[in-house]
Image (cartoon, rainbow, N blue to C red; front, side, top):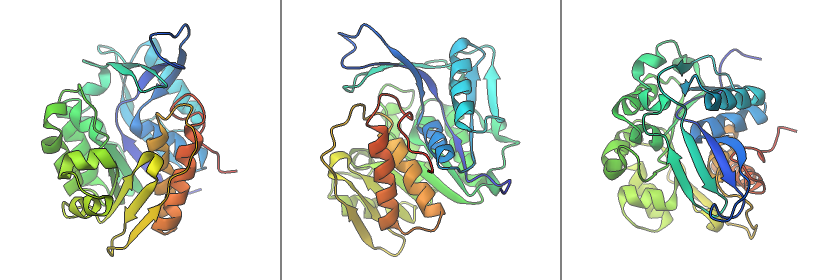
Length: 296
């Protein structure tokens, strides 16, 4: 196996406490972890690919749990900084869509370009960052820009807009520079509409591509997904009738499946199918990554 990483990703991961059903009625919580970029890394590892996750965790029990879980998946954590002064973020959520974050002042909110000095972004086949990183603080935002500017391979961005973060009220302003520096944009339909205005999916993709990325994927949830390739071709994949047990993490799994397929040489229509397969599998069980399929 080559020493080259297939994917290097930067972003915050939190300890996740998940209630099946509603938080208001739950009597038990499942302890797991969640973060857009580390979820994709876990997916890559399940597929037998090399992935490294770059971040900060506290030197606390929550950080220990997150690190141990990702190490068991086979994700490389050698560039994760353990911060003795700041805690690991915590996410409290249920399977009906309620999410509460306890991440203000977290270790990851102090991510900075200096944390990236030894990371081999230039040698990686692809790098991934989400808009969340640009919205949790000024230093993480600069780190997100740095990973894209230093990348030698495919530069991938998922806007992943979230409310209630440091930069949520300025999301368009803060995330636009990421789009300008990326090659592949993977975004939810409603998120892309917030960035470039409401329009049919193909027009959304064209507006986004005008900002910088060569290839744009529009994730449409139950309505399926679509991709605008670098030659202007439009490819659609219809949705299915699956009833989700826990939809959180399905979009990140789609990203991992689609990106892994593209890196292996598959065309966008085939990659859409791989992304959808991975996303659907994750949605069948509780947790962000537990249902991700293996290479076998």
